[in-house]
Image (cartoon, rainbow over all chains, first blue to last red; front, side, top):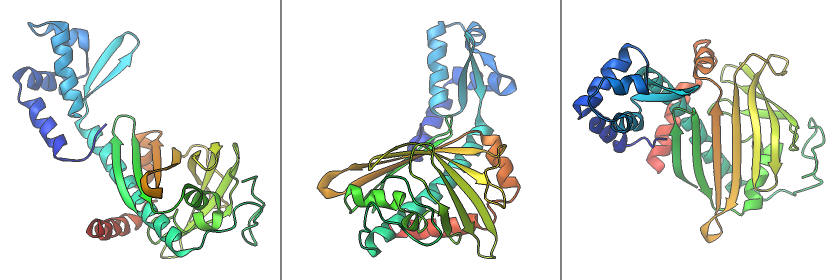
Amino acid sequence: MEHRSDADVDAIFHALADATRRDIIARVVEREHNVSALAQEYAMSFAAVQKHVAVLQRASLVSKERRGREQIVRAELATVRRARDLLDEWESLWRHRVAQIDDVLSTSPPSTPSHHTPSHHTPPKGPS
Amino acid sequence: MTVRDVIKDVEALTLTLTADFDAPVDRVWQVLADARQLERWWGPPEWPATFPRHDMVAGGQSRYVMTGPEGERMHGWWRVTAVEPPHRLAFEDGFADDNGEPVDDMPVIQCEITVRAGADGRTVLTSTSTFSSLEAFEELQAMGMEEGSRTAMSQIDAVLADGA
């Protein structure tokens, strides 16, 4: 989850402020790794490596996907950017829509609720 | 109207937007249930929509047409998956061919809208849109189906931002 805010930027800087995490990024940018294989590369516990991955995940720099019993870590820079573009566009659309809804609410009197057949070219509605 | 919250889950490809309105729940529900009101807000800027078919029952279908500034027409459809008046509507929103009929291999957006009473007689509406696949929607954009609406949307966005 993310709110688009300075907090995102903070999360990215925080994620990249650590040498191990930068190294993890460098490895997964090259190719995806499963978490266990990744953990073997470092002189620290599996749990500690998982924590580093979680920090990177929160900053949207990597993604983790369960594949069978394995957890695969991937760099998601490009994908994340593309996904964000798509969601940004949809945010604009929905901001427009709710503004329009507000117009409808403020300009039209409450319409008659049920048993009201709206207009000529509309088939009958279901029970409302 | 105030947009309370926008949450983007880039992994699940989900956008959740929450807004509240100065109107009772039943009144807000009507903008979904009544096709004549729905068509006043569904289309993107400069692409007004008409809903020649709208059936708000589970399994019910809607058909809509959006008309662009140059007279271009884009067809879409809804399939209602769940409806609990006046609080919840879940539907699939997809693309249709020039005859208005659903195209099977086009991407579909899962939509859910909830309407509930908020503080001070206001009503809180939450819209959740989930995209089936990033690639599919990017292909669509590459095909130019969003032509024109993009600029208009950013203009509207600027206007809205000023008013916020």
